Image 1 (cartoon, rainbow, N blue to C red):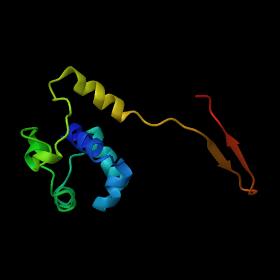
Image 2 (cartoon, rainbow, N blue to C red):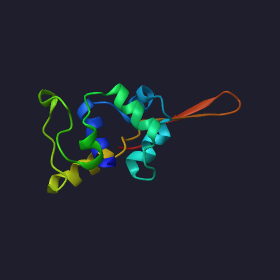
Image 3 (cartoon, rainbow, N blue to C red):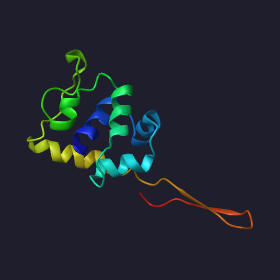
Length: 117
């Protein structure tokens, strides 16, 4: 289910943080669900269906059927048994790169670092 939830976030073009904010759940809980560490609870599922009524629950839970209840909303995504599915999921799970780091010191000074890309 966590891979299908990741596909849904990609289809909706929203980040994990945005998704957590919409559902009213902790951002860390979304990360734990997507990584497979935790399984979503009843409150999570209820909020998900309340905020995204177009999502097909059968697809989310079992992988059967289409992602959306409305066939016009359907987008083309690789099937779970497709060799591209794992690659796409891995690419989507990659964390964005660090552009710069700012360190604040107790004397109110700071230092900015720009790691090599």
